[in-house]
Image: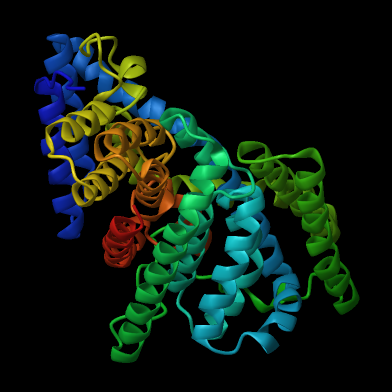
Length: 467
């Protein structure tokens, strides 16, 4: 089971701790990530020119991996600007404003709706659907944008994605690796997903309420430097008549509802579902811009898109270097630097997980803790999915030695990997929610950190009793 750990593995570990430390100290991590990429590259290749090139190549790789997310966020923001400029946004949110009147109602309503939609279509398209309509409502009800991002994040990328009961991509990967039926892993995961979800969202809500009451959290806390005030000249608000605004306010939810129906009928998920939302948003942008700006519509369309893309790349700018570094922990290493890992290696992150599992004593308590830690480590690449097969394999090994608990351990590893890497703690994985809400992804990660850690500890303890 042991894996040869080389200097590359230890450099990676050291820089993980450095990056986490800088984040905790609220310092920028770009320089640390670039030095880390360079040191790993020069240790692997021994070539100065290849190592310098690897910095650029790692950035290009990260941008390629994140491009679809950058695009959909940019397009949604461009569409949102047309809604705000024409006053359609105010008409759309008025019915919700009557229902959602308090920060607590905003947090739980947005969270539960996000969880339900994410079960069927995964979180990224759900963020786009939810953010455009309910973000302004929540802010008017007194929940800061950071609180909205937390709700969408924890319920969508956390609860819905870690269970994945409808699409079943996550349990299929872990179950196959553990040699178990998918239904067995799903059944074992239900109490763990429930505990993790309830504990984490309640803890997050408690900290939100506490900080709102003390004044530590305000409407401007955590706002991204890319988020610009949406103050508009009064003349722009009268671009459409009241009747036209009402027509568009009905048409837009109808188009997105048709998207949801199409996703269900055509079984569109993940990237395909996101693409459908993005294309619909472009169509809405064109329709509103041409109707409101008339003769200037052609130029205004380009102007809105430029604003959207400026926003998207401003938000992603600080995230690309850190994503570039962490992608070296998985398949990105070979594509960026080359085939310089040991022959039996499955990637730096997976090697570290296997190595940890091979040196710990075996008992159900140690097994539960180890699967949580291994899952969390494999989640560091920011996908949440790349390492869950490893979690399944290690769960099978531990269960064989312990004599029980294969499905529970498999589910626990899956939950830890997805909560850490799927979009609640790794900054570039939680970008969709951060960007739609206009908050700093690093601040959002810091806000999520304590609730998620509390949830993982409690869930691991519960797993010990279930095994």
